[in-house]
Image (cartoon, rainbow, N blue to C red; front, side, top):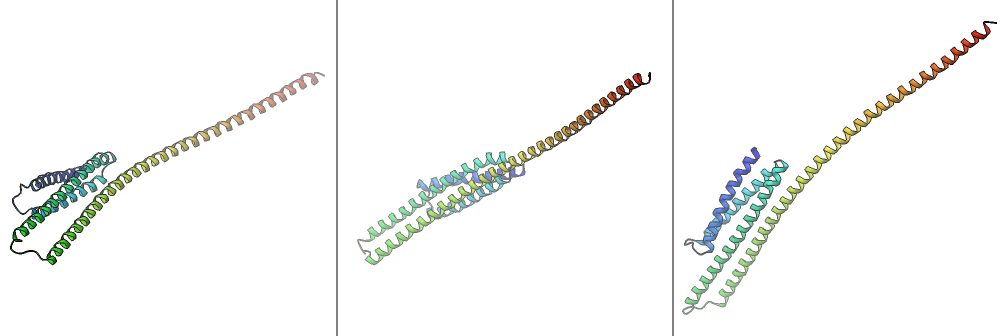
Length: 230
């Protein structure tokens, strides 16, 4: 019950963060935000990290539960992981849109100013190098995010494998216990059978001894009957 309560607390915090993130990202993407979009996106990314931490807390709490609860709540964690991945993708798209808008705004300013001063070839080359470096940095960040998501999926798969191994180990222990019970029952039955066989042997010996005694007794009686009269 304690683990379930802890999971519910982390779940409540995660769902509140996810709802807030979806609303904030939608506002920035729609261009309805009048403030500093870049600063807002940085704040959103920080909240995404917090939501990811809450999701990891849920995964940890699920591992200490019973098998039935692990299956049920583990499925919810996977759904929440997909939800957070979708939010991360929306944040990346919003960030790319904001960067494009900033570049377009800078280009327009340069064009209006170009009637007075043309950019030199050197500054244009510098601008291109900066744009390329920014693109490479974004690609690297995207790869890191994808790697983190893959690691989370691997962690989920490992937890599922551990659960399955635990279940199989418990089943093997139960089977071993049944085999030991059957072996004990067989040993007891064999001891009873040996006891019965011993009794049967002793009974046969007694019968043969009694039969021999009767034959001898009859022989003695016949001998006395015939030879004593003479």
